[in-house]
Length: 167
Image (tube, rainbow, N blue to C red; front, side, top):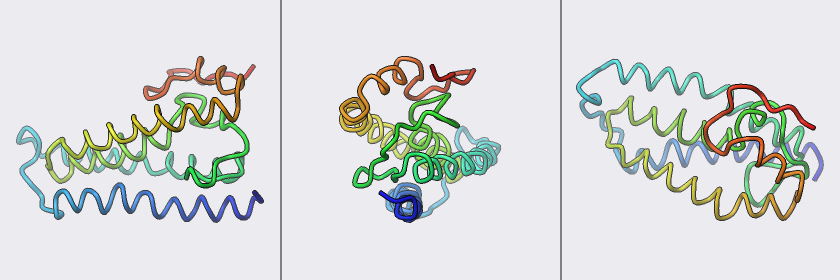
């Protein structure tokens, strides 16, 4: 895949995935109705907004790495040609999934709108199953021992405190 096509595919997926996962699905669940703040504490809404703002640069970085370093897109139909092990991937194996869809978009959305934690659980279950049942076996088959070394040294969801140094 050429770099231009990888950038285009990654950009397209960047628009589609967040719109569906952080836009349509939460709208479908909530109809954008704000409910009382969690635990009756309005500060939880502010915390949710801050988490969303903090998460966006990492999301952009992950999508850019897919296109520019991995020569692919974060969509299964356009996988990377190289295993991504730089940037945020030195801290956590799934930064775009764990950060964008769960930690910094869907769950903070729940905090901002006061919706039930069911939306957050949907996000966590969906992405965990996708990663465990499809992504990890595919990466192991594609990148072999390189992925096994990466998987052994970098946690799936909870980031390391120090970056992994490549061998």
